[in-house]
Length: 384
Image 1 (cartoon, rainbow, N blue to C red):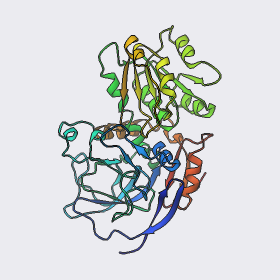
Image 2 (image 1 turned 45 degrees about the vertical axis):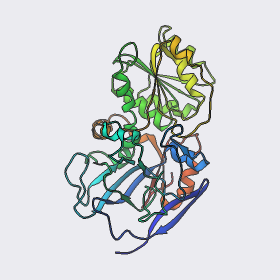
Image 3 (image 1 turned 120 degrees about the vertical axis):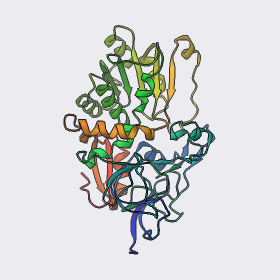
Image 4 (image 1 turned 180 degrees about the horizontal axis):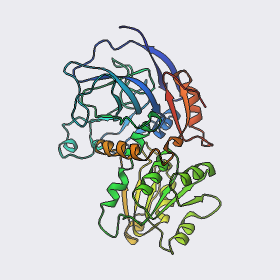
């Protein structure tokens, strides 16, 4: 079988085109070929499209996007075939043709110091990132989800999707797995961290912030405060578990949060905006001795002055989370499967586009008015 495979390819910032690649007739041992069902547009994709291409700035893994790339790392697909010897799912049993799966967006090397110590795979210093660090100029080319087919390299963590979980919710798995940040914070010793009944605030309730609202509510937070500039986003946050919504510009979020918490501030604040200026807002919102979790800054956002005396004087804990943890996928899929009927998680996906309209999909995702998660469905889609 040697037909062409269509894929949306980003050749340079702003230059997104659908083109045809060769069908991958030969797979490496342990590789997996997927027929793509859905692929979300992530904040990182938007940064790259705008030309903000420096990722993991300040680390040994700092890199710029190796154009051309096929974007797409929030993926759901169906296994078509595997390379010689088969390929295991992350939980062990071999993958079979017809399995509906979510692949992790990263492949760790397994050899570096971080991998040897069992650290989360986003700390691997030789990490392959689908849709980001793997150029489509390299055969077999199909290293992103905005395509009819996608190739997973040997060693990529792959997870079966529960039968009862709709694809339109399963496409949120990678995004939702970033909420392991709340699990990390819950393990911090007092006075940092948080416990059930505490107050959690989320700054920026785009898709990443929204799933943190959902996770905080499901995990037992007594109060979940959503902070954003867009009323429509706050309306959806309220439907998904936020107890209080603060519209930036109408009120001072820090003052309002203290009013809601008897003057203390939130026990934990998640900064999910992807904008540099909101870290200061997050620090104003948190109580003394509390924790701020930064989850939204994956590209170089530029130098910003910050006074470290604030951390010391207020005994704050600042936690940076580099992404989702592969070890969180199984429990994330179970959580989504158990709750999608009673929580309208599918509403996070507001727009769907076919592959041919990838440029329109990106344009819609770049607008904040009414758009949350925009998804590309390579074989169908209404563009609504």
